[in-house]
Image 1 (cartoon, helix red, strand yellow):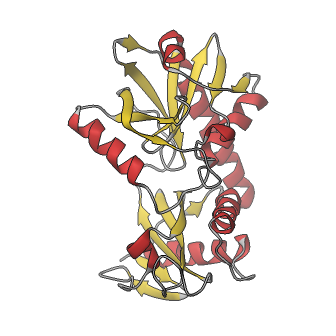
Image 2 (image 1 turned 90 degrees about the vertical axis):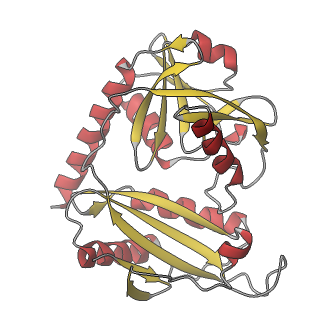
Length: 286
């Protein structure tokens, strides 16, 4: 049996739990985070909560002082234990502006919502079959003050994912309004050329991914050079390797972009480094 936390009330996750007046439901007026669970422990919680709270500030929400890393960690662990998740899992935390008003809200206070589910893997695994991608040309993602956060206004990602399915591809590459490729429908993007990693900078409008930052830090700590730079289609065609990252899946390698084929040597190394890092971190907590 799975449990959720609706603004402090712990409930069995067996039906509707969000009110019809919820502003996230009505207007996409909220921010969220997706957190991976290993061995029944949520990982990288501090970075996720810091981004969640920064995103709330960016969209003019006013969060109560008790909504801290420690508070959310306690609530997540409570749900993990109640739900009996002892290995892999995933957690989603939302902050939504409280009900009231139309486009202009009556208040900027927030409610929170946490739900939790088992996940089939108890570590990060490199995908055995490479991902096939192409460019999503229909809508550009604009560079603005909320570009780096996970907001509930996700139609560009939804439409990109639908188009990938229509084209029988695994994902689509999203560009900013300057023409730079910045991410996919659900992941940050890295390219590898001559053993060096390149990824769009946050000023390009990509999501400030927690896994993106962890991969950058792991690479640098292990002697792999990383540069934040604009990425254009020509760079994809010249790259030796492309991989994409997010908090739940970790690192996934891209096998093809149009007619170009890629290797997965660096991706494979990074997955091993990622698992070693979290194995060590979790062992320290025991």
